[in-house]
Structure formats: C-alpha cells, structure tokens
Length: 255
Image (cartoon, one colour):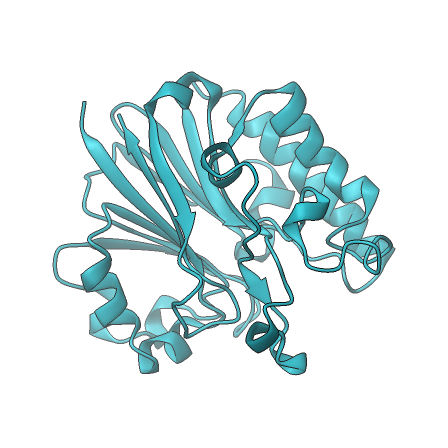
C-alpha cells in the first residue's frame, strides 16, 4: 500500500488564486492529487504555470459560461483514464464534475450546485446529488470524492443553525442526501470521522467579513467509499490558508 495525500479547494477563481500565491501553496502542499472547484476559467485563459506546474499533470472541465463554475484536477499519479464526459446531461452541464480512474480507485472532484437562487435550483441540486450517487455506484473500484457540496450536514457544521434552517445549504431536503449517503449508505465524511466533536468551517461569507468572526459553514468534504474506511489515516481543514472564501481540506489515506 502507498500513503497518499489529497487536497481539495474551492479557489473561487483560479486566476485570482494564482495572484494570491496558489502555485506556491500547491508546491508546498506535497499533495499527490488536488481537486479544485469554481475555477471560473477555460484552459486557454490560463498561464503555463497553472496548466503545467512542475511535477503535476492537470485536467480541466469548464462551464459553457465563461467565468462561471469549472473544476480541475492536478495529479502526480498517472491515471488509467480521465473522465470529463458523463452520459448524464445533468452531470455534464455547467462544468461541475471531473474524475480520474486510477489503478485501485476512482477520484472525483465536484462543484455541486448552489440552491440559493430559488427552489428551481434546489431541485436541480437534489437531482445532481441523486444522479451522482447513482453514477458512482456503477463503478467497479472504490470511490473517493471531494468538493464543495454546498450543504452543511448537521448543526455542528455551521455557526448559526437555527437562523439558517430555511436557508439553502441547510434545508432539511438538502441535508437528507447527506444523511442518506453517510448514514444509510455508509460513505465516510472523513473530517467528521476523524474529528467527531470538532467545530470547524470551510466557507465564510466575505461580504459580511464572517471569516474574521469565524461565523462559517462546513460545506466542503472528502467523502470516502466504505470499503476504504480502515485505510483512512487523517483528514482536516487548513482554515488558516487564505486566497479564497473557502479553506482547503485534505485527506491522508493508504491505498
């Protein structure tokens, strides 16, 4: 078995993140695989440093709308295949999902829809959740996925749960999928698995300067296939890393 280190980060614009030291952060992360969300760029808009950083191969999935959505993976491991095209039009749309098949597992990073624009987007989000789960269950190897899921699972995962009970991101209908995936299907929320009582957040509203007060939400996850439960070494959130309204999170695992 090899000990692998994964990172996940919603960068809120990769070109902006580059100006804030993203390449230095990546170099010092020593990660084997990094999944990014909300890159907000097409590859032709990116610098050589972002496209071909030393030691990594990069793969990109962009939204049709420029400056919106987008995901990417940097990897030191050679993939069996890169998955950017999904048969399901919901999973294909808006540049929200990209994956790698590796020798012993699949890795995906996703920018799951935000339901904040109204119930039609909440329904779209729930549909995306369902279809993604259906898809990964068809795969013949264990799955690790990470990303901005845009939902806090339990009250411990946001600073003001009572005030946000009817806010998208903490509505019961959204949380039900995480209850199902983690509770019933036994997929592992790696951070909560290693830190069952720890209060920690991965996203803060910049408009209200919530990060300074640590009034945040934990909406970013590393989810691990139940077949790999005993392989998890550690997982955490690097809340002190700046450059986005989200913090990076990491997973260390034996595979």
